[in-house]
Image (tube, rainbow, N blue to C red):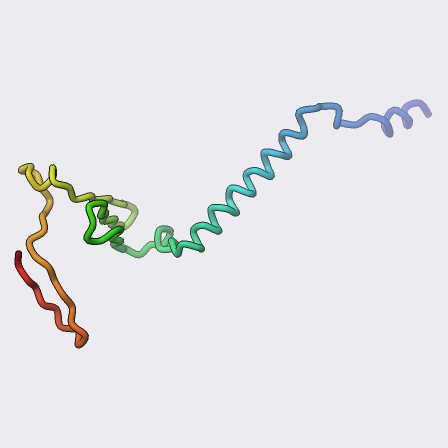
Length: 110
């Protein structure tokens, strides 16, 4: 009879740090849910796809960035005055292109 009473009263919840394990699990679930919500909210699902793409952030401003994904490699290019003056420059602005309502593109050199 004493053995049965000991089995009923013996619990594993004597560890006060067991609560932290549950809090860590809740925080991880919250973090994953937040990441999924942000990706779907800002339409960033192409980042996780296998397709190649190019994104231009802040076009026509000094903070312009060109982000290109080819396969598994993602490259970020930021044009600046320092890059234009160096011999290893990747490109520079040479003109402006306009697209008309009928789809025709007109290039205007500077």
